[in-house]
Image (cartoon, rainbow, N blue to C red; front, side, top):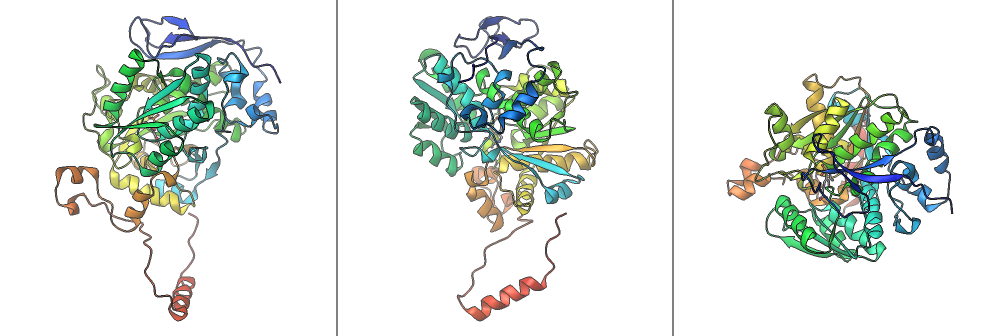
Length: 460
Ligand code: F0G
C-alpha cells in the first residue's frame, strides 16, 4: 500500500485576536481560550505539492479504494489521519457536473452547470465530510458519534457509523425532517432521538452532551468534517480540468458547506495551484436567513439568530448557524455575496431543475432561484461561468414534489398559525399532475396522439 500522506496537522482558532493552536489529536470543537471556531491547519511544503494536480488526475484511473473515493483521492490536501486503518469509505464524492440548459435559461444565464452532490452514497453532500469526520473519530478511539440534524447529516452519520462499527446517535427536530432522511437513519441502525423543538434546539443539546459524555460530535462545528467537505471544491475543479469558474452557488443553513468550500479554494490558491478564486454565493430561504439579515444590518455586531426559522426546505430551516463566522470569512476571501429567496421561488426553481432531467431536494433548488434573483438585480452577469451545488437528492423529500405538482403545497407558516390554508397556498406554476385515465386503448391512443401533435420541449 502506498504511503499515507503525513504533514503536521494542528488546530487553530479562527479569531484574529486569538489564533490559539492545539494538537490535532485533541478532542475540541471550539477554542479553549476564547470559544472561537477551529480550523484544521497543516504545515505543507508547497514544493512537495507542486505537481499534485497531475497525481490527482492519474488517480482517476486507479482501482485503489482511496483513489476511487472522491474525497480521499485528494488526501494530500487534508493530511491529518495518522493511519490508513482510520479510513472508512463508501466511495463518496464522484458526483457529476452537468449542464442544465433549462435552468440556465430560467435564471437568465447563458450557461449553468450543476454539481449534483445528491448522488453521494447516502444522497447528500454530507458524505464528503462524514468520511473524514469518522476518520478523526477512529483516530481518537471514539465508540459513539452523534449529531443534531435537519436530516441529511443524520442519514450520513448513521451510514458511516454503521460501516465503522460505532454507535450512531442522531438528534432530529421532531416532525420536521423529510421522511426519506428519517427512513435512512432508522435503516442504518442509528439511535434516532426526535427532540421537541427545532434544529437549533437539538444543536444546543447535543453540543452540551458532547461536553459531558464521551460522544464524539460530528456536526460541522467539528473542523474535521469540513476537511472532507472542502474536497467538493477540488472535485469540481478537477472535472473542469482545473479551470476556475467565476462563481459557485450554495444553499445556506448551518453554513458549514460554504465555509468548507471557501477553505478548499483558498488553500489551493495559497499553494499556487489555481490562479484565482471563484466568488462564493450563499442563498438562504427568506424565513431562515440570519446571515443575509446580518449583511443587511451592515455587518454590525454578532449575528442575530432567527428564533422560529421557517421554510418548507427543511434542510435549511436553521436560525442560528454555528459556522457563520467561517462563512463570512469565505465570502470575504472570495468577494462573495448572499441573498434570500421565497418559498414560491424555491418551489418553482425545483420544478425547472426537474425539467432538465435533474431531481434535487428543495434546499438545493434555492441555488437556481437565487441566481434568477441575482441576475435580475444585476448582481450576477448573464455571461458568468457559474456552478450551482445541488446538495441533496429529490428522493429525500418526495412529498414536497408531489404536493407541488398536484397543487397541494402549503407554507409552513400558514399551517402553524392555523390561518386558512388558501393563504399559505403556493402556486404550482410548472405543475405536472398525474392524470386519472380509464384503462381503455382508444382513450389512451388519443392522449398519445394529442401529445405528439404538440411541439416538443426546446432545451433552452
Ligand atoms: N442542502 C441540504 C440538502 C442540506 O441538508 C443542508 C444542511 C444544506 C443544504 C445547508 O448546508 O448547513 O452546510 O449550510 N443540512 C444539515 C443537516 C444542517 O443536518 O443535514 P449548511
